[in-house]
Amino acid sequence: MDVDTSVLFQFLIWIISGGGATAATYFLMEKVKSLTELSGEYKRYASLILAAVIAMLAFVIVVLLGYHQQPMGVQSWVENLFAVAFISVTSSQAVHGRTKLRA
Image 1 (tube, rainbow, N blue to C red):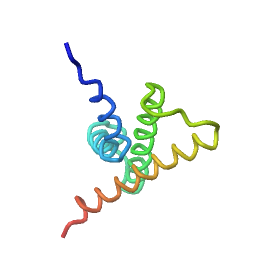
Image 2 (image 1 turned 90 degrees about the vertical axis):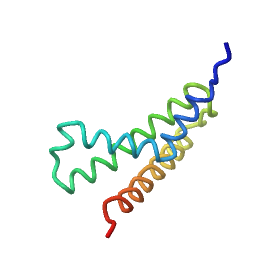
Image 3 (image 1 turned 45 degrees about the horizontal axis):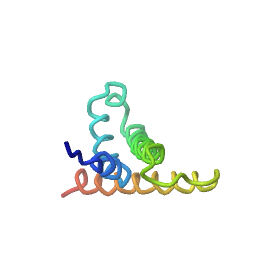
Image 4 (image 1 turned 120 degrees about the horizontal axis):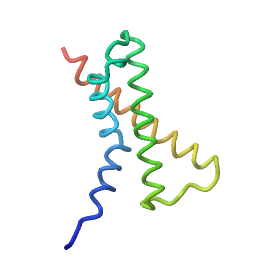
């Protein structure tokens, strides 16, 4: 039986690139009671943090599964995780602006 092993990798890349982390964040913000009860500004900060954490966890999984070379040294880890978090936060802001701020 031939199994396409790239599906998990592609799914994780989708999460890392911002789209998946944003989708998961929107889902959690609507379904998790403690998140739905947050006031406007706190909800915004929670969504930004959640999107970044989800994307960074996906990156760590990609490295642990051997899909991506392990960053060498602390500085490399910090730079990679910062890049992943930055992409996910800016993506979530772009989606928010497109969906919530339409005229």
